Image (cartoon, rainbow, N blue to C red):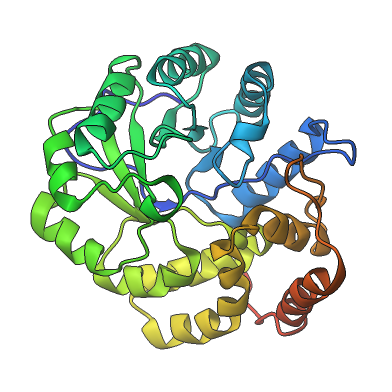
Length: 310
């Protein structure tokens, strides 16, 4: 799916799930299972797909594997929704090379993370990284702000500095501070499409005004996830709150250091994939596994009845 050249206004909106990279038990990539999950998500009504984000175990894959996954998923999605790839490299040079390669493979855009491994307190370095990668591609980019995990905080004022770069069209706000949503509106207006990236703040952010949601836990419950999002778009807050209270324990799985294992286990329990991860991540065991399974199984048992599609 190709787009007109980016303009100084957002056009990405809605639910852009961060999908897992499905694997076999030995840690090798299962392209068929990843494709099947992508199809299930598309059928739920999502408006974009993000492969190889943190949830997609980007940094555990080799350079060749990343390109293989994306080449195959571009074919699978076949233009039904925009296909984005996470860009999670340790150097600016490698991030530029990856973005350039993915443009040739047919990706529709990127979710650009700050330099991985290197946690910089200097905003100049963060801005240099983002601007330099943007120059390496003509595709639109969502900037990922997650200072808790990656040690780079892109404040509303810094987003204002980046506004002159035309292909920055969206931002994923994952600081965990919902005040940022209002501060972004006041600082940059509608320059970017604002996405939330923290599952268990989705309701709060929706009330404050966002354009989209990079969903995590919802990939195990795609119909409920989409229904909840649609309720927020309609302003049906009482109905949305009821769904959110059911959803919250599952959404909390997204904010734990082992969120990849937790969400992959949820995906397995609903029949949309398997729990297998690649080391150093290990599948859950013991009391922790029982605790997470209890959350998942309780969520499945109490799954809300959704209205039938028209």
